[in-house]
Amino acid sequence: MPKNRIIGVFDSGIGGLSVAKAVEAALPQHTVLFRNDAKNVPYGNRPPAEILPLILPIFQSLIDDGCDVIVVACNTVSTTLIGPLRESFGVPFIAMEPMVKPSAQLSTSKVIAICATPTTLASRRYAELKQQFAKDLTVIEPDCSEWSTLIERSQLNHETIAQQLAPALAAGADVIVLGCTHYHWIENEIQDIVAGKAVVLQPEPAVISQLIRVIARLP
Ligand code: DGL
Image 1 (cartoon, rainbow, N blue to C red):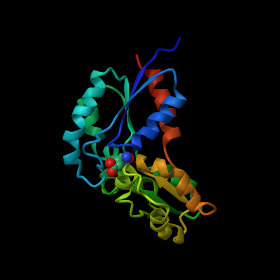
Image 2 (image 1 turned 60 degrees about the horizontal axis):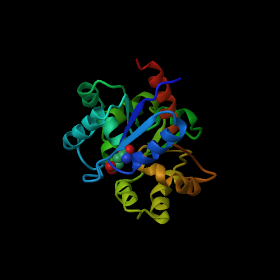
Image 3 (image 1 turned 180 degrees about the vertical axis):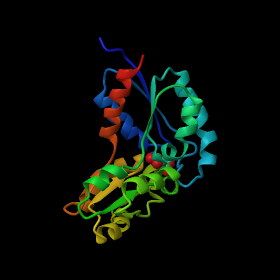
Image 4 (image 1 turned 90 degrees about the vertical axis):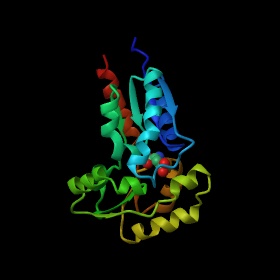
């Protein structure tokens, strides 16, 4: 009998909930604990130094509740603070960061669009990913700075999304990356908007594969 494990899933807000649901559906033999920071969401316009003291007690609570592995279902935290998290806590972490490498490989137009929060786009990790995997591509970063706030309030409408993606499509982007878990909730809408022009990538399947590998290695 495979052992029941406790999988922690963290995000600033409702973005991580889509990841928690996907993990639950894929790995029903394990228990998923989802935590967010409803008081301080969104994180995407805050500097990492302001985010760190907010997340440490939440991750501590996941550890206290017995998590064997934690998914950081927040690109903003993963791209800026995964180092301090790994140093502070002794469980394996799975980070979620914009899928620059797969999108660069998939693109035939060599133009990709990365949708992410301002803090993710400003991170050193994201700059490294672009440098390593997308040096020869045009990378467009649509203005999604208000998206997570609007998604939290169910106020992000079709016109706004279409407007903000239009320049990327006009430039020939054929892959759109969802580099913020909040945007997973509008994946279908984005797919409708870009249909026939671009494909949409998000990392839930990759995270689940990685989780399976990490769980298999747990003592
Ligand atoms: N869902 C998070 C991310 O993946 C954070 C969004 C926010 O809090 O602004 O980046």
